[in-house]
Length: 385
Image (cartoon, rainbow, N blue to C red; front, side):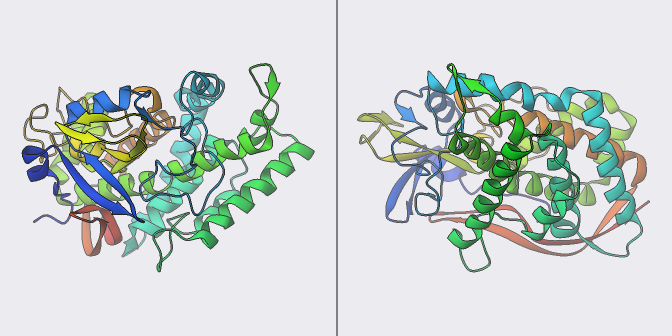
């Protein structure tokens, strides 16, 4: 099997029952696997709730034991969700601006040009994490020097070598954000912290706790996912140089290729919801206050919608993937992620001919009955100019 391949562990269960099951810290989760069910449930926010009383319970694994700040607007349901979303959405559309894109391009070119000078580079820590962290300074409009702090945190903000949920490590992020909010309150700048502190919602100023909720989501939601996407992209083009060449010769398919890579990689496997009333999914009863997860990764491989779902088809024309979610809670950072990917591909096709994989260690996510490769713990490569 190719090193860059991400097999579909959900296929048989998706065909047989349409759902899977896992035990998450003694809080069971039904995993919805079919695209139709995932989309329908994501859209039905009244029955499948994101808000809920317990902060962090919709995340899988649950974060109720390491977080008491509600992530905004992610853990807020309509109608209040719209007020928060309308407030922050213009900020997260800034990647469409030329000045923003020029800053990202300078970051990406610097990293790729540096990689070309090395005999070996470890992609996860020395390439993807660096690009993700430096690009985040553009999204937040904070000093470039802050990226050094975020790089030093490593690839995960809630996870350590010993634990899938590390409260001590999570507190590093929370304390950092608290300090930055206090700094912005005392000395406002043009960064996102200051923007939020100066904003109003429903006729009142945002509280510091609400600002913290937006910032936690911004840091946590766009870290592992972006790192995995960049790393998997490098692995894919290492084993498929013909695809890199094809994009260079046919730049008009770049956006299509990006959507296909994001469909195939599905950097976030799934996201949970809390069921508000007794209901039924896949002809299976689900009790009120129990948890389900919307499995984006499985839905993206549903053969009822995607022809040859386990292949990367870089010019795929019909591609209603759900890697950025679906319905009310679609990903705020999608524009930033797509823009960053477009710039990475543009620089790669102009500066890199081939990439050699020298060593790798897969990153396997354990979902009880399912074991899913989400990317790599280690990926050592040689970039060739």
